[in-house]
Amino acid sequence: MINQKRIEDYGVSIGELPKGRLNKITDVKGVRVGHCTIDTEESKTGVTVILPMEENIYMNKLVAASYVLNGFGKTTGLVQIDELGTLESIIALTNTLNVGLVYDAVVDYMIEECNKENVELETFNPVICECNDSYLNNIQLRAVKNNHVYRAIEDVKIDFEEGDIGAGKGMSCHQLKGGIGSASRVINLDGEDYTLGILVLSNYGLLKNLTIDGEKIGKKISKELEVKAQADKGSIISIIATDIPLSSRQLKRISKRTAVGLARVGSYFSHGSGEVTIAFSTANIIKHDEKEDIAHIKILNENRINLIFRAVAECEEEAILNSMITSNKVEGIKGRTRETLKDYFDNYK
Image (cartoon, rainbow, N blue to C red; front, side):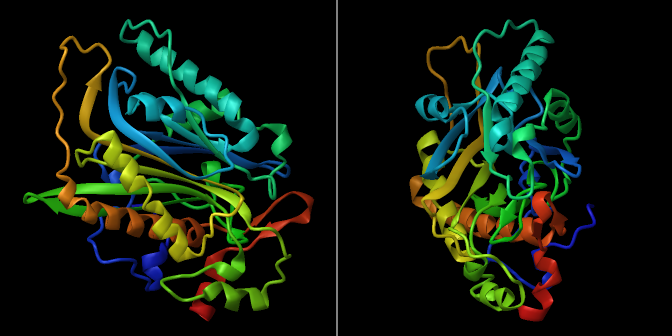
C-alpha cells in the first residue's frame, strides 16, 4: 500500500460508517486514478485522471449527474451530463488555464480508444475540471500538455497517492497546502455490501475557518503562521463514484450532500469559489449502440437514501482532510509558500 500518513493515522476518525479497504474512491470496482506532476521552479501543477471503468466508457456510458454549489468554475461537460444523465468520458482534473489543452488530449485519447474497436467517434463530451493554482504556479505557462495527460492515464492504479501530486501540486486549502484527497464508505443494502467513494481537488478557504472533527484548529495555527489576510475564494472539485444503483436524479441529490462535509471543515462557499460535484454509478451500463427500445436498470429505493447522504458527507470531510495532511510543504513562484498541515497538527489538535 502507498506509505502516506492520512488523517485517521493522526487519531482523527470521521463519521461512523465503515470504510472501504483502501478508504479511497478506487474501492469502487473498476475505478482507477492516475497522476502526472510538473514540478519546476516556475511550474507547480499537473493533471489527475479518473478512469470510471476498465472498458471503453464512450461505448459503455454510466448513469451520472452534477451539482454546482457555487459556479465560479470552468468545468466542461456538465450541460450534457445533466441533460442526458450519463457520463461518457474519463474525468481529468487540472489548473484553470489548462482546461482547453487537457480537453484536446482527452479527445485524442478517446478517438484512439474507439478506433481500437472500429468505432468512428464523431461526437464526444469530455469532462475536464479545474481549480486555480496561480498562487504557487506560473499558470500562464499552461505547462500541462498532451503528453502529460497520456502519462497520467498510463499511471492509473487502484492504490494512488494523495496530496501535492498531479493536479494537486500547486493547490492551496485553508491557506495551507491542499491537493488530492480521497475516502470511501461501505453501505449494506438488502444484505449486500456496496461502496461509495469520493476524490477531491481542494483549493479553497481561510486558515482561521479550518475545523477538524469539530475543533477550530485553524485559529490556533494562524497564531503561529503569518498568513496574509485575503478574500475567501478558491475552488474544490468533488468526484463521487459508487456501485449503488442510483438514477441521475438520485445522484444529483447525493451530490448536494458534499456541502455538509465542506461546511464541517470550514467552507462558506464564497462568491469567488467554484464548488463543483460530479457523481456517477457503475451499477448500470447504458450501451452506446443499444438496440432495444426499452433499457432495464435498477435504482435504489428512495426511502433508503439517508445512508448514502451520510456516506457522501463523511467521505467529503475526510477526503478534504486527507488532501491536506498528505501534502508536503511547497515553495512556489514569487517567493510564496504553502505550509503543510502535518507540521502543525500534533501541536494544536
